[in-house]
Image (cartoon, rainbow, N blue to C red; front, side, top):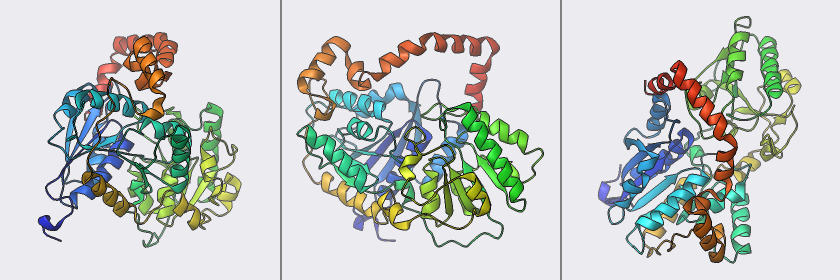
Length: 435
């Protein structure tokens, strides 16, 4: 290993903030790349109200790079936490969803007003962009370095920015950071498993979810010598960015009582993929991880190929199949390698990220927008000023979406909190998350 003085980020401090498990993992992946180049790295896991990460989720994030310090906090501490970073921290990675990225950028502009010694701001994605892709990229467009998954994502971002007369020079294609460590040269398992990777909110309809459960049972019965594993996105007490349905795991668990090789597993996806011979999902990022490892991968096509399901992202991958064809031959890879390389797998992605980061560290940093405004891609100066005057900062941080959701669900939320408080589930759930 090269001496610390010879490393490109020697003497630099790199921090990251994240609220949810998938964003925490990608933030930790970027931090690991920086630490190996000599940087001092820290990840701040900031709890969102009533949606704390469980102990298991925190351990999985820390396992990504055990040598990076992890500190717990609350999202409400973001402003005070980052205010002191100007002049002390060199890079701040925002491992945040779109709306919290907006909120963070507005708070940072306030705290770092006029300062050119502020940290370089970096944003990256933890998964594929199949819904609201341009909107999500423009939410994050105030970052100095925006890491994108593919040339197609970059092209979409360029179109949106150029339509507004803005530069897109802050964006680079690094591929999915979670695929940087993928090694396709692995030994084939003796008795490969078939793993279905669940998503929190896809498919949306209960009938669709019941259909998938029945098909997985039939698949297990057709291949009795191979474990057929259902991997829930989270357990019932764990949080994700998107609200989960949860009942599929219960259905599979009941089915497993009569089908011995049908199993439920909460092991990390990376561990399950080691013994996996066929990965199945509707549109999970786990499909890209499996393809990058050379594993036979199937995208469920029984329900159609639509934006709602997100599997339209995989339409040209060669992996879309119905359960009938999966049952006939689950173990022969069918995905197109060239498609994978266009859609998230960038073998030089880590080096692209580090090179782009170093360039920005050696450039003079421009001050963040003033007067409480966000980047130009959030709207014209006139609109943003009007929005602030009549709707406050929340109007800009939410792009107008959050307020309508709150109003619609206010009564439902109040009833849920009352129910949980009366029966004691609220405090019990919080206690279990910490175990």
